[in-house]
Length: 161
Image (cartoon, rainbow, N blue to C red):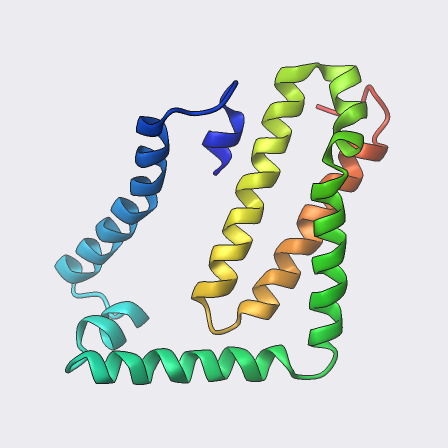
């Protein structure tokens, strides 16, 4: 996502396909390393060693239940909602947030900064969905994205690099 966002103009079909394949190839590489080295990751223990589709569904169901329980514990739903709204507002008002950076450092710096934030957002979303501690991952990531947006918007021109 960060690479796609850093490109000038709209990416072509070939670039989009490569961008979609890259994370899948990276995941396949991690699985291969885990298998070759005899690692004991969650993935190899629970997914690769599953006895069949029914066990995979059971594993996924338990992980979702755990994420759901974490998501509903304490103030987590409120915190997730608040940061979700703040992040959504930042995306909606991205031009205003990037204006100081664009004015002081130019289009390339603003595009690079935005690409980093978009890449971070993608990592937060995918990490939250793929992990049973998803709500916590979302909040931790969202806090840092909010800090980054605030810095770009409020930093003095000579401090933005």
